[in-house]
Length: 188
Image (cartoon, rainbow, N blue to C red; front, side, top):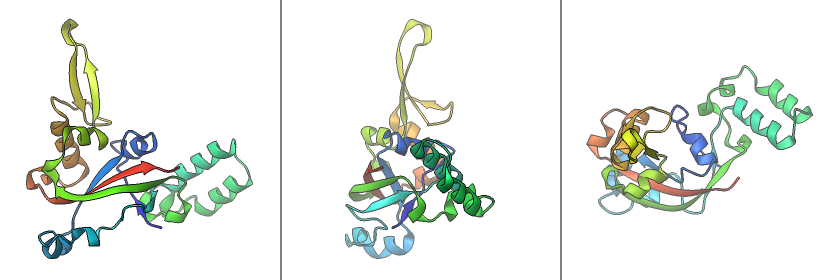
């Protein structure tokens, strides 16, 4: 089983777990891009395939919290987990975790290849952009928030562009790279 990481700083792991994020875009590496996108073979090289179950990467400290909630308290299993993993690199860094120890999973339901800027407004919301109704001066305005920030934009695409440049490399939006678009559903 493989794992997929979502950005913590912008609350994207939590958005996946609460069902508000159901899509993710991942830049296609140049070595695959050069060979495959033009010929239409990029899907063959996608890291994840439709129907695949993928672990949601979380630090082991977060995994322990989930174990405690599911068990209804702190027991022997939780204590053994704590004793084994506390003060190890994956305790606070999900980059080093084992996929088989993750308590939450998604199922890939669809994959496509497109340019980053081809995203629709609806898909921006599925990527985690938040729609907010703000009431300035006795009117109601709809704004779009970059998650876990105080950044509001007029359109979902503007908010998503800001999010992409904060999560990835600054300038990714302007470069408009080819991306894998993964749609998914939360399994557990």
